[in-house]
Image (cartoon, rainbow, N blue to C red):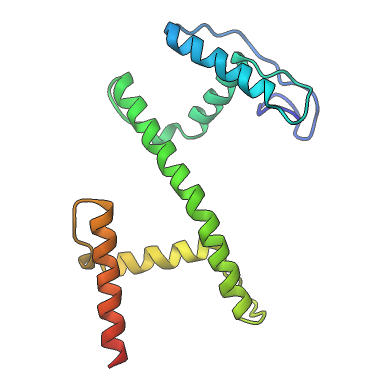
Length: 163
């Protein structure tokens, strides 16, 4: 499998050309990176290309370059906090995607082949449109409070529609 790289032709087994770049890292970062590389290397299901600390650094750099617009802050602590926030959100969306995909599949199956597909993305657009249309329904300072206020709004709206 070809690592992410701009120099290798897509679908090629040719490794992209790399250049040395020196970075100063703390000893705990080096220890953690080496340990993770060894663990991932040992846990590979397909033996072949080695996984090294440099492999992990290139993966991290590709992620930072691709999603660098999500970083904000004036120092390393703030930049790291924004990166962790992005990763946390991405992980949350990843787990939600499975739930939304199952729901979309159930809804699509109930529609008996209507041509306009229902996808996880379409359900997200529906939810965001509802939130954007009724922002006053949201109350609270935490996610739990916001969710409770939204569900209460939906319950009240359903009760009103049923009358």
